[in-house]
Length: 368
Image (cartoon, rainbow, N blue to C red; front, side):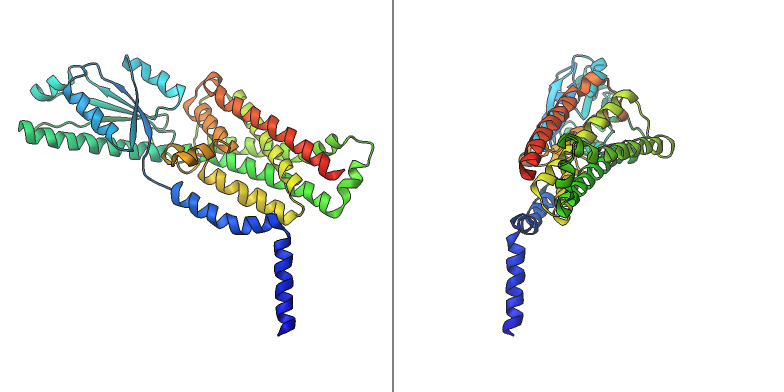
């Protein structure tokens, strides 16, 4: 019995000797329950709304107040004309535009032909559908209130238009997300494991002792995964267009340039992981578990970032896939010009520079 207890004690010592693995084992369940508890939600929250209201009467103001009252919608701005709708959508941030007809309140009470049009950004079809239902219910509630007060049996039914994805195909939503997840996993996971394998077997030191400069040795390990990821990108786009009927509405060159930049970021993350872990198992845990969860939950792939608590929205800002997926949706689905996604390009470029610089410095110091 004492021998058995000694073996158990030895195993505990062996496990707790690797502090990083212990942190992953004990910390990952906590992180997962927090993320699943707060990030996974089908509710519509904090959706930014633009309004065109030419009459600015009591009826329109009451409807706008009811829409803005809860946590579901935020009235972000007022439009000067209906023609501003397309520009506002392409600038980003706005998901819903409400257009009231002229003399809304007067026509509502006297002729009954007042109209409301809802324009919804359906590049995220689930959110667009939910937002349309929420606003329709709010308008129906206002209509019931007014009927009780005025005793006038009229119908106020908003006209709903789904932009960019009128048929609400889910492929429009998950194709950009799948692109981000596949590129991140292949680049980060495989690069980190490949480099750690060389370090674990002792052959990395041999490679670094060769006449070739260390930076070229590292780049040679990363280059194959860059090519493989580019091939995957091409295959995903071909399948999306010819099998799933998801159009590339924007500039194909800039979509490709954005994807190659994201591949560089993912490769640099794999290099960084290889500098902080010692074993292939630890590299797989760090790159696999550490990348899949943020990409799935915090990037906007499955659940809108706007619907998450503020602290998770801040945390999602350091997830490269969030910026990539958001830019892909806007270029590929909405067809915006590249100047409208300059922020995403800038953030990904900055991430690539910082991660590569830190990784190369750390990599060199650990192998001296």
